Amino acid sequence: MNLLEPLNQHLNKYPYIYRIELLDRFFQILDNKEIVFVKPSCWTDPMENIIFNARILKGDTEYVHPAKDKIYAQCWSYDDDSYALWQIYTTKPDDFGITKRHPGIRITTHLNRLAHLAEMNTGVFNYGLVNYLPKKDLIKLPNTPEFIACLASEALCDDHFRSLLIKRKSYKYEKEVRLMYHSDENNADRIYRLKIEPHELITSLRLDPSLTKKEAALLKEQLIYQYNFKPSQITQSTLNADNKLIFRI
Figure: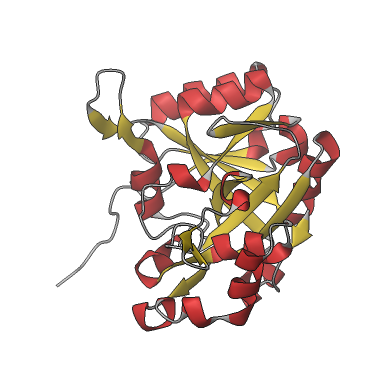
């Protein structure tokens, strides 16, 4: 997998990234041995995919760049335990359309293990750190030579992938690392299923902080005996731990 930009100081020292999945979806990953990348058009933030979603004029004609629907992506973070991310990634509509918090699990992988995706699948893989820009810099993008050049070219290039690494500064807390994929296969679906061997990609697991001790113990037992994870690979987030501070006055 190709790194588009240099890593920051944190990732050079601690080269691990994390992704939170709903428990049901995580077991699908294990059972089906695949992870799902989505088209950026599925992202809810209107400023995501900001360059391809901009109004593009070719001469005087509205133009939709062909690369817009050919790249699939998946979002990870280098923040090892974030209360905000647990809330965001596990608060989803249920089968009845009611939005609520669902149990989740955090997957960890080492950056070196991202090569496993390219070993198991054909196509082009890139990844990079998201660059969080303030509004004053976002409005300058239409005058940026490399992005003008990449939109003028229909041949897929690294700058098309780099265009997906721009996001509003208000999302900086995500500390996002974005994995991106392109295949020459014609695929009209909003998702792309990529093959994996879970134990080759996943280095460790962290259980949802909202689980009770009993729920966490049962889940850990299932992951050990049914899915062959080692006990040392599984911990529970302590973000919901009791306050044990004592003040003596």
